[in-house]
Amino acid sequence: MARLARSLCIDPHWRGRAECRHCAVRAAMPFSALELEELDAVLGPIDNFIVPARTTIGDLADTGSHLFTIRRGLVKLEATTAAGQTRIVRLLRSGDVIGLDALAGGAAPHVAWTITEADLCRIPLALMRDLDAQRPRLHAALLQRWQSALRQADAFMLEILHGPAPARMARLLRLLVTLADGAPPAKLSRLEIAAACDIAPETASRVASDWIARGWLRERDHSFEIDAAALDRVLED
Amino acid sequence: MARLARSLCIDPHWRGRAECRHCAVRAAMPFSALELEELDAVLGPIDNFIVPARTTIGDLADTGSHLFTIRRGLVKLEATTAAGQTRIVRLLRSGDVIGLDALAGGAAPHVAWTITEADLCRIPLALMRDLDAQRPRLHAALLQRWQSALRQADAFMLEILHGPAPARMARLLRLLVTLADGAPPAKLSRLEIAAACDIAPETASRVASDWIARGWLRERDHSFEIDAAALDRVLED
DNA sequence: CGACATGTTGAATGTCCTCAAGGTCCGTGG
DNA sequence: CCACGGACCTTGAGGACATTCAACATGTCG
Image 1: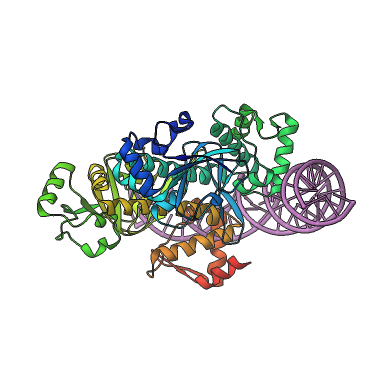
Image 2 (image 1 turned 120 degrees about the horizontal axis):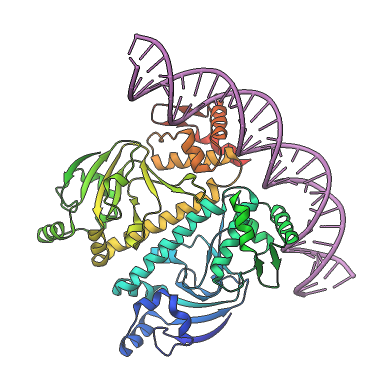
């Protein structure tokens, strides 16, 4: 989790600005040089981190004092049931915000992990609150993030937590393809698949074995190769 | 769906103000008399409706142009799967907002129905947007509503859409008890229970019959009588 | 090398779904 | 008034499916 830069990302000299295309904070621009300095001093700086795969993001934050936006990479949000089981409730990608709950003032009910290597911007909560109040466009962008989180939660309920195990897995893998946006879809472990679909790890393993045998699925080091058309056929029955 | 009043609820003379305790809009107060008139004229009035049980709320809105807050009553939010099945994804009660999606600018992916008779305030979208921008306390209140919707979605995923059928139903009935807040919990049909828990209606019927036989559940005209302690015991195994 | 986490595969069990038949209630129309 | 259809609920029987338990394989890390 190497920290690579330290300054206000709203500054046009911020490293790797191209990656900021989908970031909510971008809606807060432009800023004058004076404002930049003031914000930085008073509310705290935005930091950027390149985080390896399979890392908790909680480690980067003083609890509840920061949000993160994802510039690049895939992140899973885990929640724990009353019975102590840990389940995947959302998958976040570039442009998504981690820790929206902090904005509304609650303790985060989730644990976030990177699935792939990720490029994250850490934003002080105070700064985000301030910009949210001052900049209508940022405010609108944040509403979009809330909405999209809710939509994904609904999609999980309706599609991924419903139906026979192969259908659940097929929809999850379709989602991975979508989230990867052209790039090779991220690989999930059997346990992760099971935790997302609410099925037993053995079942996930059996279905995966079957699909690999049929040639619909191939596993590489850090990615899947998915025959999307074949999975769509699974879903039609 | 009798319309009972027509004016700005922010006006202290608004009917039944006691019920407004939990309303998000209340955070926008106080207003001067002048502001009241202007807002009313420019952005449209807030209307109040008493809606009977089992009514669609969509009928009260020009599509996407209004939000509703619930003063009293229970409302279910339905969504439709790709396969055309209709499922209950959330249960809303007093203080909750129906149609938050409109604020973020998307089409509503849900259909809202009253479960019980309900007392609803219809708020023009333009007014809500305006107040959201002008009044930080309202803005904060709306964030709370987003957060609570997301929390309930997570709770559905983790608790109600997980485990054997009796456990799902037990958790759903526990939720009904909580939402009723001391009053008799609202009655759901077998089909509604099935649509919320993602089980077959026959299964819902079987479990209900069993519990009724054991004396853990009783059905009245419009409510359940629930032995919460007994259901908790079901959940412990 | 051993410990541990992850993945695979088999066999047995249990749960839930499906299909089917029959029951009640209610509103409509003959 | 009664017959009828429709929506909901109930109960049974059969079968499909996922889980559980178990044994074993593989790989990583100390």
